[in-house]
Image 1: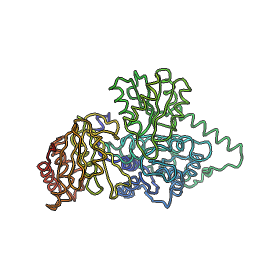
Image 2 (image 1 turned 90 degrees about the horizontal axis):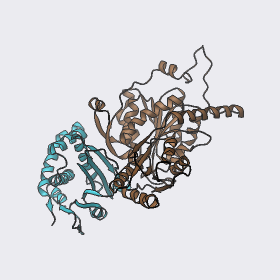
Image 3 (image 1 turned 120 degrees about the vertical axis):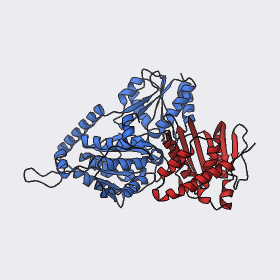
Image 4 (image 1 turned 135 degrees about the horizontal axis):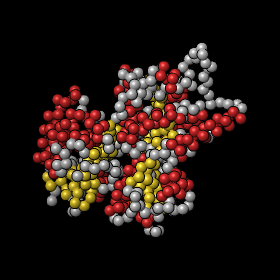
Length: 369
Length: 181
């Protein structure tokens, strides 16, 4: 919203976060979407079906028979160097974990969207952030990481769709957009990204020479697999993956600060929780409490250094999440005991209200200083 | 200017679409807007509600625990949201089917018998627009011309011939609303 030139050129629209993802996918030249409906993200595929991009950009939109199937369709499309994506909500993303681990090991780019709902189990359909561990600590087996983006507005749902594809292709690794039911279902103003054409087959051959698009006579066959029976070979793959993750940690950390300049107390939250906390920080400021908010935009890579720097500046930190306390572990690791870190959360589909957060800030952090 | 509104009632009364029309009207007058529905299973026959925020500045939380204005269209919604109106704020209710009425004395309470009117005059499809008219009479947060622009933007063009009917419903709502002393 800060770019006023952009405002003049591109129309400001009002839409749901889920709809914004669908429109952004078409506009950024996505080749294929494969999904299975589940609340609270069904509008993503519904919007794609309404837009019929197969008639305009040639993008494929396909309802698979299950989430297991849709992630494997993504795997197949990604092998061909195509921009492919899927979306689901918590229980559906759990079903995809095997495929995600395979795609990460095969070093293929793709985008996965998780509009989280309350769990565990089939849970509820209301918003939650309880898949943080699953997203950033490796939901499937093996040592892998997903680039994990945490949008906190409808605008970011659109922007992160474009960004997720860029990062996925830059590092040949799956990127995850970790949203929740609030961001998926709410309507806000959004400026959609500009149209980019889908890549041609020649462009794909040039940009992603590893793609399995048919072997020309002048090169060896491209083989994409996540299987290596030799342990030494598998360790080499692991070392390569780890080097890539360190590179991502070095280059791609994103976070946003709000009223942090003179903050004595730091609230840390992502996604919807961060929006609620921003209001709580405004309320705290109006009562003379010097609070600030740090919102991680990338959950992997995590803003560890930024948080570590605040450990010497603030008297205490409060992490707020819609779960039982997951990201708080990473905040504590970042500050390594130098400052007290407390937690406030709601579970099972309940979104905390700003006054609850303010109360928690007062009783858990401010009171003890 | 910032107005934080909750609209609550039964699914089917047009609560979510009324919120949408308000949000589009805010968009038309260049404001920041957010529209956050309760999208739970309660939408089917139970209570539905939507939080709408119109603001001149960036909106922080789309989820609130107190409101400048509450519009309640059934008894459970009154019980849920009467206590959540900020002191000095506004509560609007449609008296149809209520057996317990608002009791707070530190807020402004208005009654609009829109359901009764709509059934008597066979205009139930524009019930929510009658109520929106009532709201705009006492809280002119958006201009009617922007409501009409918003309708034009949010409705597919095959429905644009219905806009005058909606404008009329707004006018009716403006004349129906009464302050409860």
